[in-house]
Length: 249
Ligand code: TYD
Image 1 (tube, rainbow, N blue to C red):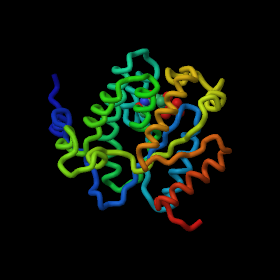
Image 2: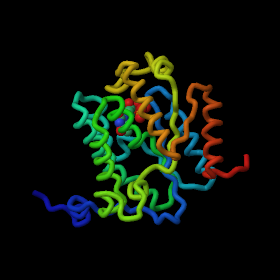
Image 3: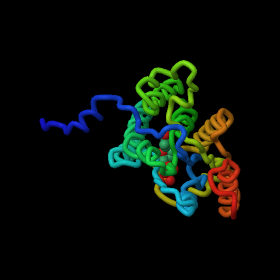
Image 4: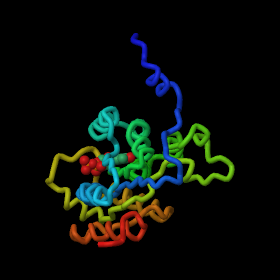
């Protein structure tokens, strides 16, 4: 057995606090969500360019994935048959690694983090889509996204639930009818385990996103059934309305 380096040992043995910035620092954690075929990924590059043009450092990443270990877990989740609990555990394991290695350090440096999917996808796909127990998902979310060890068991007195956990500041939800999304995807590539699901599955996933959108202000609905340039105009308008980019054209 080879001895682990001290830093690695510390990471392996403790639930070390995430290196997150103080709330005063202007950070932006932006996620993109929607059913497969909704077209979110096609706007990520332009989003990155937009923030860079504003002088911001940007980290563009995705889930499941974003680190070598998390990409290995992504491959397993997208290709291997498994039950919903195993799937959820692997997705949250990938997320833990991704947060610790990439997202939290980038936010601590003041970078804008643009992430293609995050935990809302787990509630929509594993929760609403697969019908998996959302109480278990909420517990996993708490373990993985707690800002400090003290937050793992729940918010401290007077602390809001949201501030105890790392959550996106803004989630662009690309909403498209499941039939339209399926038509867009048809024949474009070999489907993975999720893309191969019937349209009823995506109806449930869509309903899952809609339910989350109704619960939180951080969701912005984008009508993804519009032509591409109109979709982009909605994204820009959302960022302006929330004061995340300069108002000048
Ligand atoms: P996606 O992000 O759409 O990437 P690509 O455009 O390369 O297909 O694919 C990831 C898939 O993983 C997608 O079908 C949704 C699924 N997924 C979950 O089921 N749960 C999750 O928590 C996440 C992040 C993704």
